Length: 601
Image 1 (tube, rainbow, N blue to C red):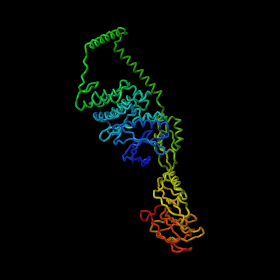
Image 2 (cartoon, helix red, strand yellow):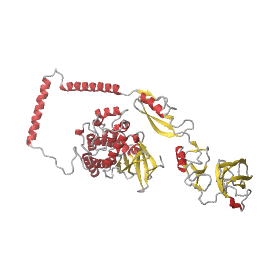
Image 3 (cartoon, rainbow, N blue to C red):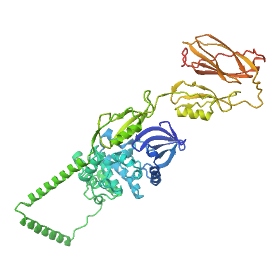
Image 4 (spheres, rainbow, N blue to C red):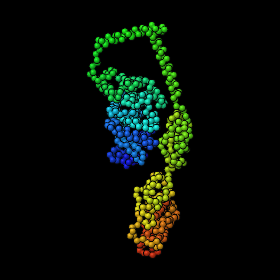
């Protein structure tokens, strides 16, 4: 795809990422003369009308988002039936790469980066939209440290496809809030939960929750408390711990309701760290006066305390003599045991089976896909490669390798043959220019930009007169084939009657060459195009040809080792006579190979 031009506008320059649904590229927009990001839909999603229709609707909605911290949606179009999305280009490094290389950020840098991301999220939430896929894959950080959120709202389109949601789930699972994995819809609150995961990851270089599968992760998100930041970073402020845990509350009611509220607390924390102010939880802006307690409240507290004492005494009196703390401990241990048994049962009942990757190398992609579907595995074409042994569409290799263990419903990635790197040039003489283009395109070849037009009495106007490389010659795909095309003969041209013949003479000597070469001469006259000379010749040998042609004009095509090196057009009047024995000498054709003494083969 690199070098491709979409809609005669977007030139793909560099691939920057992929997921099961999209390939992503940096492209140059020839209209605006700026770089953009182009995301092309992968098969089979580019041919699913319902998914494409939903994606167009979502993309149009996301165009309303205008904030420097959100990658702006620009255009959605198709090229030869392949749909693609165009976004504003934000130069920088993906946050995933940033964390991989530097492991973790400092507290101040992480807080500043998260404030920038939450400002972008707040712009999305104010429009009553949801990002839905906040994570390191969808964040780019510039060299100046400014973050940009990518791909807002795209998650909404996944529900319109039978496969897109399932294929994207493993990528999204580390950041999904518990209510979403239970079947709820993503919301501004679930975006906050994902932001909390992201903040923890920036601070420590790792995610707070881990699991082997999306099901594992969902269970851990729903039951496990997040680890303490201060266990990893001793100098981190206590208020940062509180902000993080509030963002990661299991129940949305206890969580920050949207990004704006979390953003306000992080700004207070940033100011406090910058100016050395102390902070207490819950955070309050500087200058806020705590609400004084009043007498009635104290009375109520004393009353509540007295009632608690009475209740505790009653519990002690009605017990079987065991101390209350011991009874509490026993009940806690029982609850833990019940939870552990439930966890074990859930894991063993829902864990996917372990399977062996079957040997599908050498099968066609469709045949292998059918076999894997029977095993509850999925086949994914990751790339194509040339092969001189296997025809197009045959699987060359797989990852994980044949015989390796994989979990049920996982992907097996396949490299598929795109056929031989070489193709045989078809016979194009006598074909129209459009038909020649079509034949060459089907084989991965192209028509050279410089098409030569010649006058001829034999080949109809618009038809190919000659070609180079010659027919049946094997060349690499993407080779440009040079063509000569007939432009016909003007109506008033002096054309000899079909029964009038002339003798044309060609004479030249070969230049100094390193080896024998095959010299072939084709002549086109009023009767046909035919080979009149074909012999092996050595260095400096003389070549003399007398050829009888029908009509007052003949065209000679001279080939060295099947490569066209010169075309000569001769007319009967050129030699100053009009009999059957007119001679027409020509200069020797050049050797076109740039290396002296070497014949290009």
